[in-house]
Image (cartoon, rainbow, N blue to C red):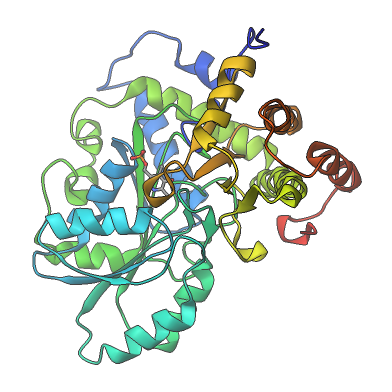
Length: 404
Ligand SMILES: *Cc1c(COP(=O)(O)O)cnc(C)c1O
């Protein structure tokens, strides 16, 4: 018996659910790329992407995914033989650093682990020890989707300042942009990058990079520049140059609609929605963890992020649980990646999600735990519902005012 007819729900940390409005905006013929409304659309998107990053700096839109935006970032500001510092807290900053290493950059990893956030004091100590200023850039992910951690980027920015170091601060916000506060300029971030298919509610296929004046200064002497990613080419007034060739027209139509949805909701409201749905998920997991078979990957509650919850499984096979959810109920749960493969599952609460989507997902997981005989505390979903019921309706709260 299955209950999966109807729309399948993706509860994985990207790609996420694409709103019908966005799909409809993309369903149209191609247009002239040399003249007409597309030119103004491109300008509006570059402006509004910078607005989402919260920077007065410049934004670049690439045909590519997050990995493409990683490469775009590195090639535009670094040279062969430069040294960078990668802040480990999962897999993604390390993966970004691995790209740099393959391009001939010297990479030092500030050791962290899968179960906690980067410690800003350790960043400060390492930078203070770099007397000659050999470190050219610092790479970190705001949210790491493999571990489920959120790093305190403001504190890392302050750590660099306290160390009096001028390395570029480069932040991966693929899994956090549009979902939790990110203040590129106010936090002293020089470069940030993201992709379209997570918090921005778009299909996969676009990569974004935002750069401030310091990053654009470094660009002038960067030796790793290549034609396709090069910012100078893309800053041209010629429309064709802005995308190094034919623009991804339909993705631009969709992106306009997705950003309009985000602005219409209000970014603060979107942040609060993510905080509430994440906390509801955590309340359910907390109850289930009473059965001793499940536990949060991230040890400190305040370091658990608002876009994906990573759950370690001691007493059950996470992949069998995921298969059960998909095949019986049409809910796709994320698998553990890297060293957590076969040891964890991941529930995303990212992008175009609402209470019925998340409560339905939690309900299916609780069904699966019961059906598969996995020991778990009873009433996780009830705890999520009762907590959400208390929070919702108290209008005007900011994301950081929600209890957790
Ligand atoms: C998903 C993700 C990426 C990679 O994005 P792709 O579009 O799959 O290349 C990079 N960083 C983080 C934090 C991510 O969550």
